Image (cartoon, rainbow, N blue to C red):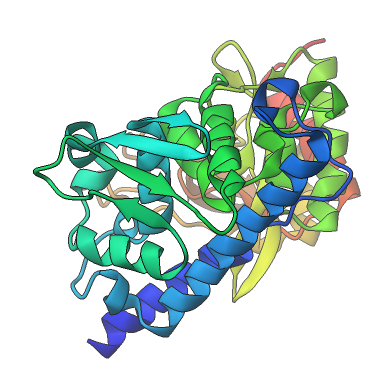
Length: 351
């Protein structure tokens, strides 16, 4: 039980740290303001973000009192707070800082059906200042309000619809909604790049931001654009031209630290651009270590597998699996410029 409790605590800590408070000078899209001025919206949106953080603080003290899992389960079961808040909006109608939620739709909503102990979440929300009147399976509807600051409900409604009104595929929307990013209600004309790009970069390191700003421009030179429906692949911004994907660069946790990485599949450049490959090999020898485990069942190194990459370095044969190769960890911007050159040559990309 201690282990399950610790998993719950870690889950809410992770979600809490990704909430970046809205800056005071943000311009909100007019369609999201409702009855509020821009200044009022920013103020109440920040209050909403702080309220979510406060809720996570309370859950962290006692996950089980909020109905968090006391059993082995998958990551989605720890998305309880956001699942409930989104369901209140998407299964309800907004009027004068009140959400009137259709009970049948709420209980049959996909992201609610997977959760247990729903009443504990409701009592937790009420403890944190929400008023949820008439909740229960036998009711036709129930109301969700926040009496101390009614317009917290107003900005919540705008945020949920702002995230849903774009072209995001549902799977990408699931990845975007947890951190209550103001980018999805911000006036898009004030954004230099795509909303999903800014939302991702707001939580990235300065090094990755510098790299992605460069990569965004490079991708455009070759006709690749951020796929605003499926903007992320392997945690990286995904630039596409038709089915083709540009160079992937992102961050992932390595030895407890967020680390910039790039994932590339090379095959032809080992012979066609050997000198450039050897230059990279000198700086990233770990990247080119053999990692093929002959997982197609064959014990022979020359057996057929479409994912196996055969190449020689310094006269020694290497066998790599395309699924696991080639990961460059901690590349600098200059390293990535060289990696991109090889990527372009490998994939015969033309302007």
